[in-house]
Each structure stands twice: as C-alpha cells, then as structure tokens.
Length: 283
Image (tube, rainbow, N blue to C red):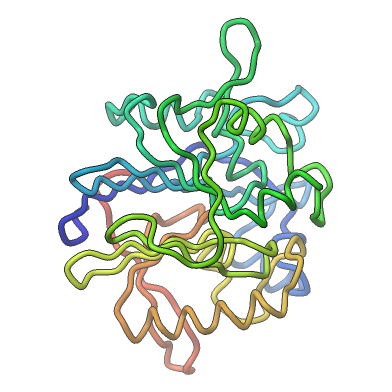
C-alpha cells in the first residue's frame, strides 16, 4: 500500500506457536482463549509480521522473523511453519536480500532477530542481508549479550554476533529519526530498550508496535505478556500510544497478529480501545 510517498508491504516471515497463558500473562484462560484458541498443548498460533518500506531512496526492512537455525526439538516445541523464512517471503516479492539498505531490529529475541542471520553452504552463520546496516538500540545489544531476560534461551548469539563481526551493526540510543519519515521510538516494558517504529509521509502514519502490542487481542491495558520484563510500563506506554493512534488516525501493525496485517484504533461503545481491520493487497 501507499503511505504518502512511501510504498509499504506487511508480510509474514513464518508462523509458530507459543504458550497461550504466557502470551496473556495474568488474564484467565477462559477470557483469552475466546480471542485466539489454543491447541491441545495450550499453544496459540502466532505470526512474525515484517514491514518493508520503500522510501524512494532506500529499502528499509523492519524485523526478520524466527529464521531457520533450530534443532529438531525446538522445531517440535515451537511448530515453526515449514519452509517459510524472511528470505523466502522477500523472494516471493521479487526482493533480493542483497538489495536491502537498512534492517531495523526492534529487539533481539529470536522471533524478531532470528532471520537476521543464516547458515551458508559451509554451515557458517552470516548476515542474511550482506550490504545492509542493521540498527539496534545499544542497551538492547548489551542486554542480549548478557542474556538479560525472562526466557533465558530467547537471546541467541548466533542471531546477532555475526552482524557485528561482519561490520554491519549500527547501535543507536533513544528515540531518533532513522531517515526522513522513519522514526525509532523506545517503548520500554517487554525489554528495557524495546523499540516501536513510526512511519510517516504526507500526514499519514503507520506504527509498527512490535511487542508493545503483539496482537490486536492485546489492546486492553492488563493484556500484557508474561514475557515482559516490566508489565506495568508496557501497559502505561501501550495506553498512551493507543490514545495517540486513535486521535491521529494512525494505522497499526502488530508483531504477532495471526489474523490481520493492519488495523486502525477506534473507541468501542464501552469507551475501550478496539481495532478495525485495514485491508492490504499482499499478505
């Protein structure tokens, strides 16, 4: 779709499953299972939504999905969608990974940064996007290297260390304009330096929420993940962002929404935040 002067594509880098209770934290199962039904192991199906922005001068990719560097046990646990990766998804769109200019990683958990690297024919792990600059918050980089998180296996060095070794890493600090029309916003809570990405052109705004709001089923304040380091901060910032989005007519893209690609924030009859689907041509 067009967003002002930009071309935007929102697509999947592959589906997978996580525990539904962990995805909804303190919310009782009888409530959350109405929103996303679990399987027999209490897992819910999630997507790994990525955004490709063509500004006219650059190609910017936001997120890279899980990648495919997993062993058989992990494949069974997470039920990764076979054969779908960031490379295959871009290939279906006629995009060569070598043509990418910037790759934004909102944080370095494996379901966001796993596709940032891949194994070559010899088994060596290398950057998936050989000429791109990978953009990461400096504090997030340090937390990843020190494995500072709730799930101790979610920060995996093979997903990010090869980027530094190849000289493709750019560390940033705080909110900043990455390039004209693309702004990085620190939205603490899920991790200490988690980012959301704001895309704006000619008065139109799209916000990639990443794990601040992982799905449209997480719009209510208390609906936050057990994986969040600081759930109170997630809730507070989420409600602030939703108020801005509703007032400004923003469109939102959620990182793990399994049913929609994009939505617009509205107020329900009960005065709560809700979402209306925005249709896109691609999926």
